[in-house]
Amino acid sequence: MGVAAGLLTLGLIRPPDVLVDGRGKLLAVRTADGSLAVSSMRAAGFSRQVWHRRAGREDSPLVWPRHGLSQDGRLSCDGLGCIYRARGLTVALVGHPAALADDCRVADVVVSTVPVRRPCPSAKRVVDRFDLWREGGHALWLDGGRVRVESVDSGRGERPWVVRPEGAGKGRRR
Image (cartoon, rainbow, N blue to C red; front, side, top):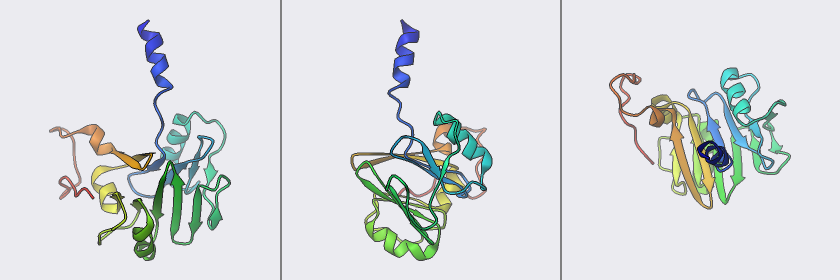
């Protein structure tokens, strides 16, 4: 009976909507059909393969459009980054500092591979380059206007044997 209950709960676990590797070289978003679309097929190959396998996919991952809309319409990209809309939230996926001013005004969540040095007034949560450096990869779950963020560091906890980057105390939470 315990095994059956355990197997039933597997179907209740929802995978993250947004994934970011610890170096900010690879990002992925959940598509409307539940598969992953990745920012690059060249960067962070190991992370990409692990994410795709954990998504239960055997086909090749979709790649983000360089410009324009994704097939499901959730992702819109230009030369500076992308906007991802899912589950009632707008997520700015920023790849260039020039995109920050506009994206910080409209996005509910900002995920930036570059440092965010000024406040983002509209954002409920900001994950930037420094967060990735301090805490490693991040996963974001979007749900009805709320966002839950987990990092590699949050899974490791505050233990004496956990090595942190030099000068990286617990970072700011925005």
